[in-house]
Image 1: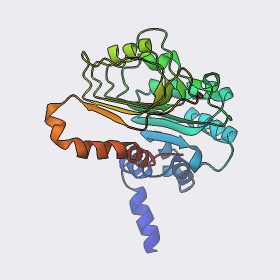
Image 2: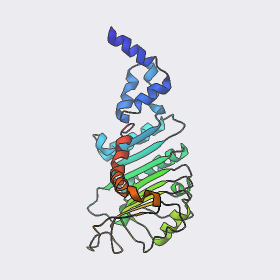
Image 3: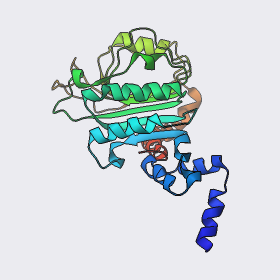
Image 4: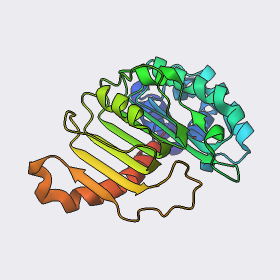
Amino acid sequence: MADDDDDDRITALPESVLVHILSFLPIHDAIKTEALSKRWQFLWTYLPSIQFRQANYPTANEGLVGFVDNTLAVFNCSKLEKFGVDFDYEPHFAPNVNSGIQFAAGKGVEELFLEFDSVADDLYEDVRYELPQVLYTNSSFERLRFSLCRVIPKGNVVWNSLKKLSVGYVKLSDGVIEKILAGSPVLEVLELYNYWGFSRLDLSNTSVKKLILKEFWEGDDENDDSEEDDEDDEHDDSEEDDDNDSEEEESDGEDHDSEEEEDDGGTR
């Protein structure tokens, strides 16, 4: 009887509180709550943060991708804070990923994470996901992170609200770097890891306060046998932060993991 009373008290909470409770669950668990009662049936569709991870889904990639499409089709949240995908990418998934990005952009997403792994035996450029052009002209982004993607903006980059950009396993030409910096007027943190392709990085006319460089790959192709630079290069333009370099370096090393932990609330 006491359990029933507890359940009734929880169900009687305001909808915003119930959605907040669900936000701490992986999405595939949050969806299961719709079986509790009519009150819970569609609450999960209002979650402000959603991320789909291969590790949290027991079936093959095709099943996960289809599940993402079906989930987004019934999602009712008018504003998204975070959206992310993390799975083994294959070229025929490009339209599905494009749809997900367009969905998130249309919801004014503030944090977008695209974490891809390759299922191919090699990591050649032509099997990588190419970021859609719509992604380069969205001013709602405050944080972007993507890996194993092709970055080829055909026009100007317009990331007027972007404060942190983290890019990994990506070829970046001098022209692309210039477009990104020119189109990100409030960018504070730029992180590049396992990167190659450009010869200069001029931050003199930018707002970047912290530059984190890890694993520069020499040569034109990441499949070359050239040696990798084992030393990380970190640059901080803020003099007031000089005394806290050690603390900042530690937080930078943990930032990626802490984001992932945060994103577990509302992941699939």
